[in-house]
Image: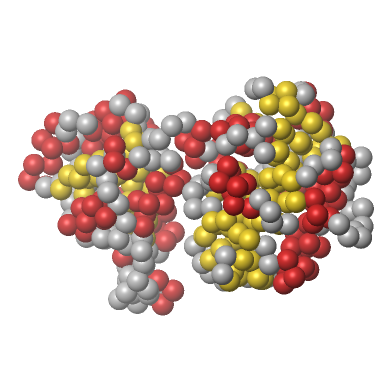
Length: 396
């Protein structure tokens, strides 16, 4: 399996963060993003890398040279910008490639590339698609009977569905026609010819991140390291009633009173390798008692206190939705709202968590039910009358 990586990106939207290197070489916790991609592909049996390089190509060439961890490395150099399509076709022509897996150098997709390659053999074109809750940044992909039939324009409105994950299987016969030297693979092949091609798709259900904008770059810095390591374990905590005393819809910092022993518990959990993940229903937002901005201020205060005590919270997931909301945009049933397990399952994907080795502490039956549905290994119903004993004596 040959892997072609589109690595010529300038990263204009990341200029304040990524300086003097191509976008795929952006630093992620001391490691270039491109190294995460190559490590991932080595795990799935790639036998050759072909980097499509342009902007500051010497940075990539000096780092990976002509062999990376026993895998041959070749370079298809763009002396002028060719567009994604032109870059891919040049690599195919230059190295006489019959077929290959193509990946974008700014996107990490965790999936079984070996199976993807097997499934697509014999196809002219194959795509990996990712289901997301908000496709507004990418545009939706329409499918029918295992095939892609249409690409929809990006919209400002939030809409769930499949997006193009930027992973392709390409057979050289795809380029058996007249094409300009410079062209966009996405616009000139996928969008224009999709109804004729109807390519087969593979569903990528695991972790996905691209670093194309500052917010997603920061997210990659926070999360990506967990997907190169083995599976993680986590201590899931409800917020009101477990972290802070529940005074009914707490959102003002001056009303925050931490539960006795919570910092000791979390320091112990951290020392034993647990991630700290907060999963909290926030119906007060839906009911108009406080705003999301109020919630964020309170959340940031709580996180700062945990940092001061040497046990920083790794992530917090919240659900502002409720079927009896008075604020219309929050009035809906949500898979994230406990007793549903949505927030837990999102954390599992984001942080590569082994739920069977994890713990959840909640003070309501809805917390426990969410943990049961998600198959968390250990569930603890927190009781106020024994809170200090429970927290300080908990055997992790």
